[in-house]
Image (cartoon, rainbow, N blue to C red):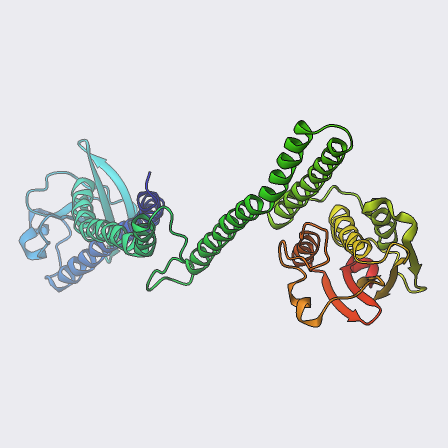
Length: 442
């Protein structure tokens, strides 16, 4: 069922119900007013006949002369009238009416005469009683004709309203039609923002959400494209080196064979690290969830990252805790926090002399846990600081795969952290600020 038909049925049903209730109320009131008007006509006719009787000469006490002609009473057509004395003698009766009307009770009452139902009114005036009446059948026929005449405009207005409703719903849904036509005309591969003219304010959020979806899809496709290109470029060299060393090992014996196998193993290890880093970067930049429900504070993250630091140089890592170090849980998944700090420590260990330690200090500031990694290596030129977080960028003396700091930057962007590099003469200082839970930070 189309949206237009559904809306028309719902609103049309409501219209019909409201119109039906209003019409029933109006017809009931109209019937009541009609019956009241007919009753007032009986009263007016009785009073008119009473006035005419008073203007006639005084009636003898008895005898035929006591009767007078009904033509003198001027009774309206369709109405019966009877004039009788207090003793019950019929003095006059309207033309063509041979039934005796019950005139013993004053006022309005219903009576049945020869199977016909009558509505009568009796007025006592002096020595006579005047009774006027009309048939209930004629009253109902008049009422039906009036109601039928009144129902025609109501039905015309109802069907006219339904027609206007159908057209109005169609016009109201026209912006959705334009959006559908614009989407239908687009190329399946197009990710450009959708533009629809004269869009109502209620549909603008839908259009904005649609364009945001296109943007996210475009970003996802671009990430996949970039990941594929980077992987193809970076994995080609290790695979070529491993293949070359294995070919050398196959053709040699003794010490050269062992060296070739050792170089092949090193290449395999490098290839394994690169693949792990690529997969982690893809997960961080994607929409996969890392939240395992476990809470972890900054000190726990620091100690776990130190345990996971590469190259087996855990003894070179030194942790310094500030008195204001926060004990609150971090407001980001512990897996990402540990991965970011582990990559910073791994980078520091790679770029520091093996006899030099790497310092990790933990402090606090409002809303953040501040972790600072300091190495005592050669540092890095200031012009290269802007390239540190680029994928596969490596300095001249680097032995890594160039993904560690790119992963840290991706985690920073995803989790609302802050990352700062400070190059000093005695080494590089990297500051990573991780948000803590708001309730605890307050």
